[in-house]
Length: 425
Image (cartoon, rainbow, N blue to C red; front, side, top):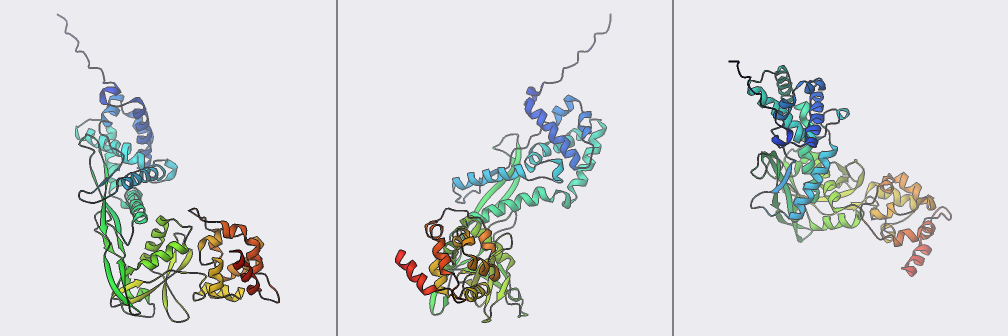
């Protein structure tokens, strides 16, 4: 009797593994990019059989999910906004060499699934020769923080950046932790960004005989780091000092209101970013009077103004925000000298607000244009407004401003023009 041939079990179709054709194809593209990232030949992936590829795809990773920490009051709209912002960031941020084209989104889902799937297959003693090669290269990659820093570091730094922008120092500061765990008790694994909140701390301080509240400048929870308070060594603030005692930062509402008024075309999000980053860096300027002020700069290191403060015991209290046009500041002094103007003149024209510089036709006011350049303030005119603001004063009255700054006998006839403007407004 002839031996019966053993029937071979046909390989499962992609659908039997819960794998669609589009996922199967996109996974292949991502897997080849991961091999390139690890300096391996992407053609290695094609040496796996279809069955082996499907087995590797059994493990799935989900898109990072944003959730609220139990017991913390996080608005649902904020959770959704952070989720969307994070998703958009992951789509444009790359792992390793940008020429490979491996986005963080693809790597954190199909890329990590590919690596995990290969490791599982190797642990099952599958004798495919490339399992050993890939897993060894994975170990090299994972043990080198320089290679994968933009996967983890940029990912969590971006979340911190967004949460810093939406926090309010005088109300609530947001932070986060993140863990890898199953998604909604399913077989999917993924990164979970867990949002948390920290209430503002208030300290009352006395300045010039008036008791005022100051809000402690705080950064929210950062990955595994708990919320922390901003501060600096005394000799970082006062360069002539040798004292290294730590000074804690506080800010009063008046300073936050002045920031809003004078940086009127900067969004609340970026005002928060500029304030926090400037305090982290803590660059200071010593004025002619001997008073020290903190420089407020944007992310491009462009100077926007100054933060005056007072130090009481070991605490630094930010009192206000002074624009560059102020005669008490180096730039404002040069500007006033060039224009033969005073502080009240500049305030009257709105030159203490950023919108003035972004909505004035300086080609019609050459004297003002030259003075701004001489004073080191021209960069204010090149910044793009972020929010809608009233253009009526500056948009329709360039001719009036031009007349204000015209030169007659080497100086503008400001009394005549100020009187004329006053009648109009």
